[in-house]
Length: 366
Image (cartoon, rainbow, N blue to C red; front, top):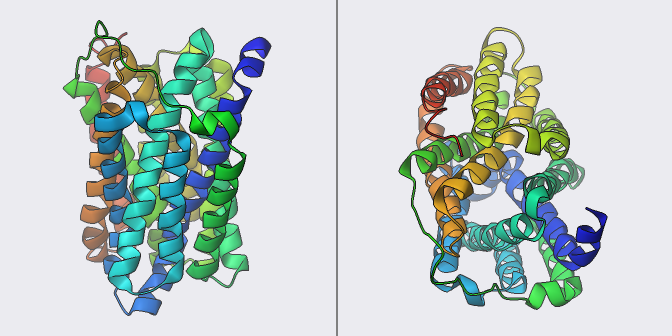
């Protein structure tokens, strides 16, 4: 393993730093929604459009990777993210800010499609473990950003501005790994879309997007103060990060779809705990299974769909369908429900998804 890390140190550095930035940018939307609501005089439900705008941008970014991925470098993806973050930070108007979220999301999607397959391929049999490590670093940015947001007087201008500066710094120091294009796909590589695993991925990413983007608002509805909700989101990401770091040590010992199934089932149990016991404690606990959704889904899908260069963008795009639709549907629905409405919806969806996953275990075996 050590010789692989040395051989791919530049790729690992660029990937880790980029995923820290991605985590910071995505996690800011949740605690910032009330601030955006006040600044632009829109309802919190309407402000939730920013979360969906981010995921629409991700979908555009992975679509670009599907069409032109062989010529796109990590620096291209970083530049797009930095521009989007700067537009959001400018607070130039509601629809301009929404457009900035779309652009930031496009760079986010491009980065996911650039780094995930390269790291999985570069580390061979240890690829799933290193993929988990790469995605775990997402949690570092996601933990820090809400705390920084509160420290900066809950001002989106400064927090998104810092995210932009981070992206510019990574762009400068990415080195050769930042300028490297992907190898062109060999004609013999298979491309086998698997609709079942893509459907499971869409629902899981939708759940993750809702927990991150709408979770703080749901906590506020239960009586938690805005600053405390932001701090609980950071705690959620601490648990998220710990789960992904732990996965580095046992990812190769458990079938990826079994991991996915266990994570969804755990989320259902924690959602019920949030309803009947403590929304704050069990929201934080949901960070652990949420951290396992993507590794379990991505590795299963890669094994099912082949190694064609179009496969990673297709896998990520399928998840983004859920990421776009989940918050867009859930934000107005939870607004019309009681204080625990969000957690009831999460519990119902995850219980149904657990049942479907258990019934599909044999078909999803690699």
